[in-house]
Image (cartoon, rainbow, N blue to C red; front, side):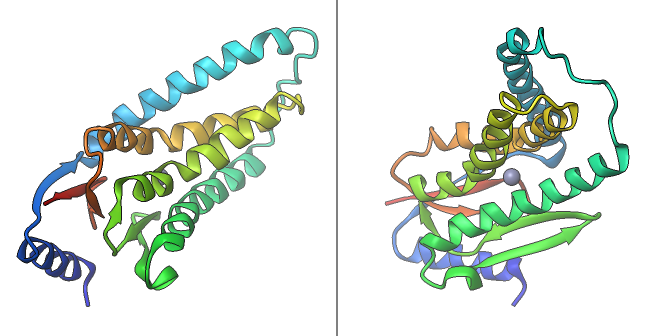
Amino acid sequence: MEKKEEYKDLINEMQKNGYTKAEHTISKAKTMILGTLVGVAATAILMLLYRPLLLNKFPDFELNIPLFVIATIGSIVIHELLHGLVWSLFCKNGWSSIKITWSAFMPSCHCKEPLTTGKYLLGVIAPFVILGIGTSFITFFVTDLMVIFIAAINVIIAGGDLLIAFSLLKAKNRMIIDHPTDPGFVAFQK
Ligand SMILES: [Zn+2]
């Protein structure tokens, strides 16, 4: 079944069970722009923290571009897989409830099962925590321009997820269904 139809069926079922819904989606363009801004702001904070350490051992400004491109693509794919992996841990049907789709060469991850706000949030922020904060942490030990760039990329890619995480704060104690096409979710409340 198409994921949109499955999503509609699920919404009907939730409403039959007495839930009311509230949509919290953001347009793709807005997510891209605001997400990048949030990511850049987070990167700027990281760089400010990093600067005192950077002063003595400034890395060579030589960047292996092909390697950087490969690392960026790898980061995007791992990012989506991490959303799916964490959500699948909370799904009754595990990984079969996770759908990774490709459009315009960009992967995106969708969870078909309703999850509590907390569980959904963990899946939303997993790539930011593991890849964004994880690689940022490495920059404090490995003074290499490539590592700094990869850390920055991973924080920027997670910018949209941070926006979604903020709107989840307004949807505490709900049942959350991931939106199948737009960035965001639908919150259900009895
Ligand atoms: Zn994401």
